[in-house]
Length: 113
Length: 116
Image (cartoon, rainbow over all chains, first blue to last red):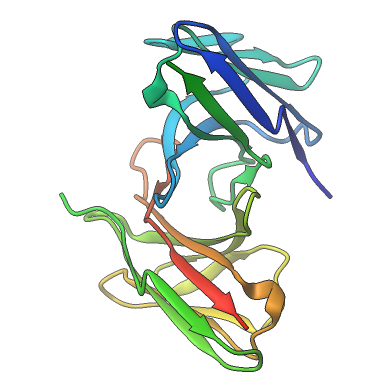
């Protein structure tokens, strides 16, 4: 059972454009929603995260928008750069005891110069 | 500060064999979890270790087992390897929070296992 659905599978954006990746979850017990960035040959690294008590969080060029009623959240990358080319995973966590992240299937982002 | 390190980086095994993967957690982190990442997929939670005991497990069969040592390093063992076990195995560490865990997991670069 896929508890976190991510789209699109791949995304091509021109330099300076906006990249948008969407995720939807099913389990209302999730209470922490991070985005991880993974470069080829590397492990995932935390990019930005949000808890469901806020609707938006911004860190530099990266923004998470969160819609609790729709059980959806999205990552916006403003002014996308070629260095942003990577695979992005949304994830969700239930509670803090067992640190088992449920990941989406990933979005491969390519930013063209 | 030393990050999460994993070994070996790549290995090839044949079906039915056994494999041991190793992980050294980031300094100050005493919780270790393991994830399996199949090609083109997101990581899937295998299990978590805290204070040398397994305290959470995903939907993986018993032939996936692990250990955590007093220095917080960890091993993932997989017996009776199957072709579908071919994947990147990621180790992630995190600290025990004093005032609430921030939620961040720190991943290593992974061990890529190929089963022929």
